[in-house]
Amino acid sequence: MESVGLDHPALLYAAGIVYNLASFHRLLNRPSRKGEPDMEFVSVAKLGEIPEGRGESFVVGEHLVAVFNVGGQHLAINDLCLHMGASLAEGDVHEGVVSCPWHGWRFRLCDGAWCDNPRIKTETFPVRIVHDQIQIGLP
Ligand code: FES
Image (cartoon, rainbow, N blue to C red; front, side, top):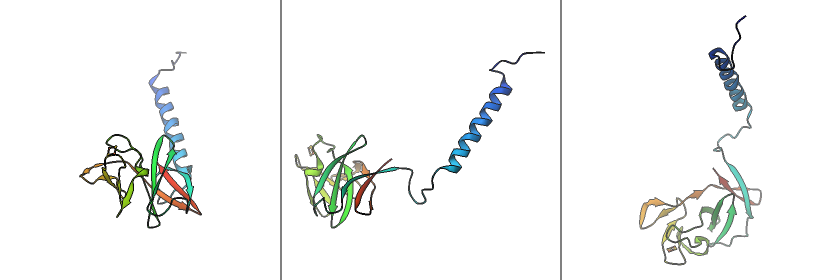
């Protein structure tokens, strides 16, 4: 009888089918996240810990995130200013815009746009409130 090597096309084909079936099975059985993008949320503070009109900086995963309280709504952007890396959480907030404490670059908190050239944006992060926890979403 002829021996069949591990690199025989029929064996590779069969291995591919098994791998794809296993992937499909994992996809069907993962937890439901209706309406939520595939991301992890991390608690950073309790409601009320970030004063109205101010920001706080948090390490979230590998990110430094500035979370602001704007009229009771919490918004999160990259804490590091795109100019020279100052902490935007230390900046003043006026009408949904934070001004960098070092040289005054201004960023819209709703979408991270640099006000002088809105095509340039800093990173933003989804925020959700679960019970009394402020949570930041990581992609
Ligand atoms: S470091 Fe933010 S404007 Fe210069």
